[in-house]
Amino acid sequence: MYKIGDFSRLCRVPVSALRYYADLGILQPAHVDTFTGYRYYTIDQLPRLNRILALKDLGLSLEQIRDLLNDSLSPDELRGMLRLKQAEIAQRVEDEQARLARVAARLHQIEKEGQMPTQDIVLKQIESLHVLSLREVIPVPTDVGRILQESVMALMARQIEIIGPPATLFHDPEFKLTDMDVEVVLPVAASVRVDVPLSDGRQLKAIDLPAIPQAACIIHAGDYSEVEPSYAALSKWIGESGYKLAGPIREVYLTAPGDPAGILTEIQYPVAR
Figure 1 (cartoon, rainbow, N blue to C red):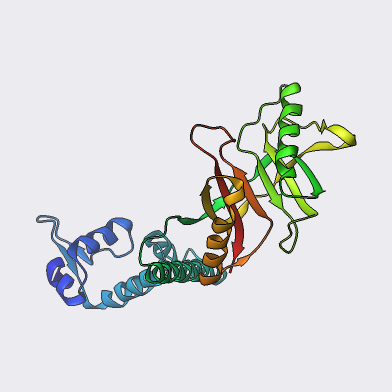
Figure 2 (tube, rainbow, N blue to C red):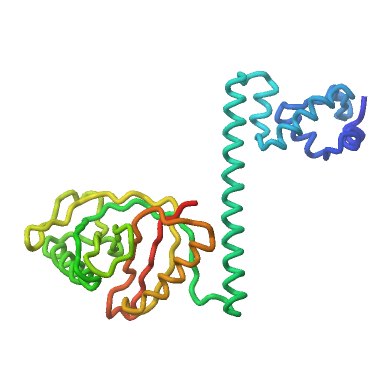
């Protein structure tokens, strides 16, 4: 038999790990001296230790390994566990590949412009929203402001509180400057379930906007008439980073005209690989 230190050197596993494995019940010492408390291991325990290390290398937790070694897992449960681990690892690889593409795009931008970009593009999840919504075709982009103003006034008249920044969704499958299919949304409390009438028989309808799993976002500071460079920067970044558009573009109006902080608009592109 080997003392724990000798066994540690033999199998190249730290003593602290061997003690922890014993505490978890996955590799008990072959013998513990009742007087000294010294722990002893035998050479025939190496195959079990190697199996622990091999399963740990696959990404299984020590608790999962304990259940597996104690035969409390069926073959189907083991296959399911390994398939789940396989999916987790594949997702991490995909995430890191996406991060690598974003780093490459940022390096390319810096090398081309000779300086850090003045605007940053961020990938993030967009939570679902309960909103009052109006979707219609508008002749020109400036009509968005008119619809927003009318909608805000209608909600104020009914004492319905707007609890977040208003936004516009652009539903056209291609870029258009006239006859645009837009949806103006105003976030409200989940308890608001009534439709709000507007002029000409139109209505703001209470709906739930679905969450966006991944959106590329940029903050535009300045007047809406100067927003095109921000759109261009975002579109270029998406192309260089290997993404594609995966839903209606959103403009979120973080501040209103006349706000002391200036006009801030977040442009959100739903994206996917």
